Image (cartoon, rainbow, N blue to C red):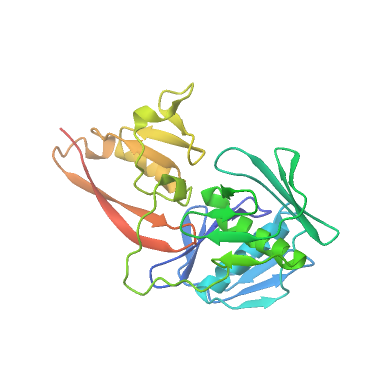
Length: 285
């Protein structure tokens, strides 16, 4: 899960293979093991052991619900105020449909691209494996990078409307045992801004005006083509999706045949961080 605070910092939270919640600020590891969150609903501020950050006004309810659910998954105590209950949820699913769920007279209504789809939602089923929600008319999939906050918000709406919920709970404890490596998910289930091995080919992505950038219609992300180690490092440090064919770089120009390694981090939709992967990058002379 990620959020942008009112100071403009990009903050990401992931559960590592030990079950610890890690906090990154602008791409740098800030806390290896978050010990608590304390929330002030009046000021929309969240406190942890290193300081305080303030949620954005426009999406503070959604972000607080998502962070609270992620904390519960990692066993991190949530102190202070509980998040406010949600009153509506808007999202664009992986098919590009604009969905909106609205509480109206204790009923949850669903709109699809502005048209009323369900006068009253009567049941919801969620799967963390692929981020898919099934309701009375079919199913839709949350965008990967928004999955935690969106499903936590939908769960809040379901609670208030008394709608039966089945499948996975957003706040359920992570079931990944220590030392066990979970299955890496396909691109449509990846954690958006975290690097995974993607089954799509560069040639199959949608071309853009920039020859070194293409768009993935599945995960709705721009993919950047890299030809040097420096380019690869610059893009991955910003959590961008990359494709690469590494040739000689400035740092390796004087050492033909030398081998550098890069460490990539991966995560599941549920927020669980997978073991890091070291990738060998050979500089050609």
